[in-house]
Image 1 (cartoon, helix red, strand yellow):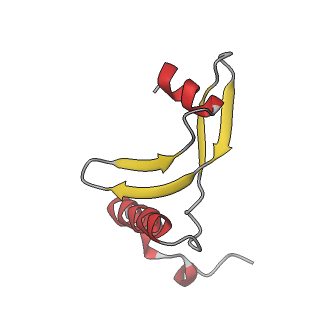
Image 2 (image 1 turned 90 degrees about the vertical axis):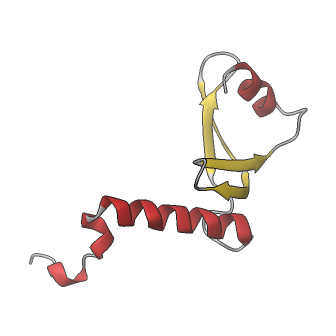
Image 3 (image 1 turned 180 degrees about the horizontal axis):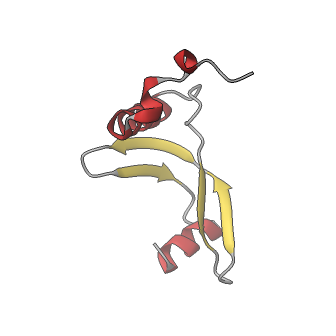
Length: 86
């Protein structure tokens, strides 16, 4: 039985609305430790050239600059990887 089209959210067919929703979810993640996007996964290239994915804490979102601010320890391998290949 096909899905009822009435149940498909309108943002699924509107790229600008989808982008606005994503930024809203990211902003919520930066504001609340209970929000689903508070701890996103960041993928980067490891020192050895292999992909690495780690959970990070989202601290701030700047939609106008299209930037996310995360926190990590300077002593971590992740910090060295991001210094090498931002």
